[in-house]
Amino acid sequence: MAGGSIKLAVAVAFTAVLYQFWAKHFVFAILGVGRIVQPIEDFPFICRRIVSEQLEGCEDVWLDEEGRVLYAACSGSVARSQWNQGMSKFNISGRRPQGSELIAIYIDEPRHDGFRSQKLAPEGYSGAAGDGTLDLIGFDVQKISSSTLRFWLINQRPPVDTGGKYLDATRVGDNVTVDVFDYVRDSKVIKHVKTVSDKHIYSGNGLAVVGDDEFVISNDHSGKIGIRKELDLIIGGGGITHCNSISCRFSTASNLKFTNGIIRGADDLIYAPFAAEAFIGVYRLDSMGLLSEIDRIDIGMPVDNLSVDANGDIWAAGLTKLLEIMAAVADPLNEVATSTVWRIRARRGASGGYEVTKALEDGEKKILSMVSTAVHDVRTGRLFLGSVAMPFLMVCDPK
Picture 1 (tube, helix red, strand yellow):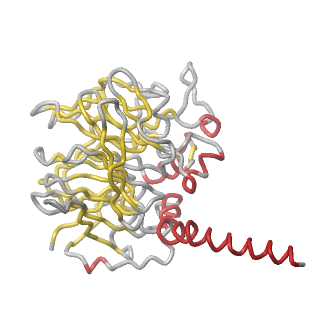
Picture 2: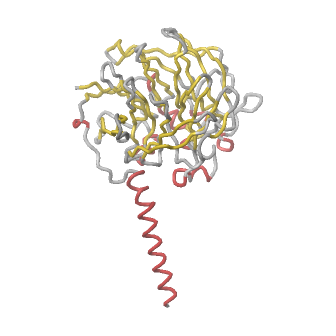
Picture 3: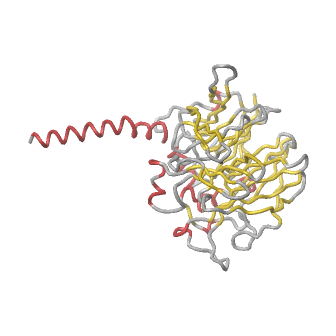
């Protein structure tokens, strides 16, 4: 009897410790259960949705402030609910027939339904099965000259055999590559330069160019498929890879918790958000391609993608309520998810550190939903908001 009481006491104590140090944090800080959110009216923006078939499921966006063009990687809302390795969705037939599209949005040319926009057609690229389609996730852009931009696109290709026939993705996962395209401003095509394929790139999510023919890319999971992958949100398993013109290598430990859309900051440091942490990791890249963590920026919630504006401020798309987001990814035409946008500014002077400000939130989901990337146009003060699966792009003008 005494032995049973001791065992019960130990079990209760262990459960209490587990709740205090892990479950409590996971339920409230990561999943966002019970999180108090503010109405959109509390913030100095007037927001609207731009509804267009071209602008469905635009997870990542990048602003060319000099050229006044917003570039969006759009895959289609329903398609993202069917083909999305990060969420273990492997229905190849659910992809759009035309695949993903890179859309140029001319932000100084308004129309009654948004802005003038056009698709940029790939040239010289055959695609996984010879149909020339792309399957885009995150991307970064490098300025080659005053007229030419180089796009580094994470391409979530479907797996194929040597004859170009589709394999069962539930058994082998997808075939992630980085495809590089050059674009001459104001043209209608992007020209394929090369494909980077490497075993260290297997679950690509975000990419940051760090030099000529050199980039870092986040892997959000420990592998493409399997039970271990499904536990990554809890125990970690992703990481960051460094690639140059010769080879790729892992540049961090492989226990990061769902690394999302990384960026290179104006200070040349690498900033990494996570879907299962409540902070942003700050890393320094050394000459060997290894990243060392030098700081953490507490956000209080997970973050999807990051962007940096012309002032050097970082903008973060918060994953406010993960359970809502999972439901919206599964059914993007009927479900919506709470969104939060953060501005992160480096403090000047000896004190250092970062100033974290909640820039925008829509607790009632009136306009914003499942924001995955927030881009700030310094010239106008506008925010452009992409979404991994929503059937619209969002734009917020300062009041």
